Image (cartoon, rainbow, N blue to C red; front, side, top):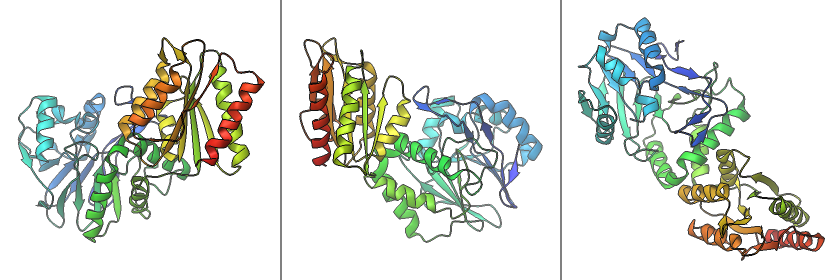
Length: 395
């Protein structure tokens, strides 16, 4: 499958309908993904990015149907991560002398991945490549989300090839933002931002403001995953600015794990108390052992406050909650309040441990949490409900 997005630019990527895990097993892809590669035909012919290695033979065979490989003048590697560069080794066996344009960090990363000393041309922000009727301008986008990341802007056609920025793990044969289900599109775009780009939010703001200040027209944003933004393409840029600025909605997320349902019952009673105090707030509950961790992180990203609960086990906390707390710390969420809760049998360390982990993640812990011995009775559940009421009041 290939298709023209303009007279000069053809999509030559791969839709991966089956993908359900990405970054090893660290990221869930419920709706699959696409690996977007683009072929520009001008006086000079340019290939922007490739696809993941499992599809390298298919990619090269299909590319040969589009163009004689010897007619490719330049390759641009906007990012060296395997899902974008995985087909390079097979392709470069066919055209080993073709120059690869990338950042200095990109050249290092590609050499480290593939142990090949290809013809790298290192570029930085503002460097250009004249390809005929159009000119390509390179824009470094360091840590969005790797050190080597960059954008390529195609003047004349006014297309921003943004690589991972503004993308989504979303498989669709429709391939344009105005043709797909908008709720699905923005759900996947937010999940992508929340789980991957959140730690780099200050850099996102800085880079977007830098690009916007150049006042270049953008008719299309051609990402490396998911659909292409062609209808009001800067709508996703505006969303990124919103998400990067300590984003929150009127939502509280409660995440817990429970050995014998005591902590679950506490979570439900706390939720009931929150709703007594504030009928308009959205409250969502997740059992971390059963729910998808990336979906949980997306809901935490949306929330103004979170409650984390776990039973005490082996003088510590349940592993699913420990994993979520590690993710929360690593992503560096800002402007969110938090507290802990949990049940226990004899030692009862879980609430203290969770509280310290929340503080370590730089969240604003608003109280010492609540714990209940064994399975809470009616009085215990009432205490949890009152705790929920007070938690909501303190927001």
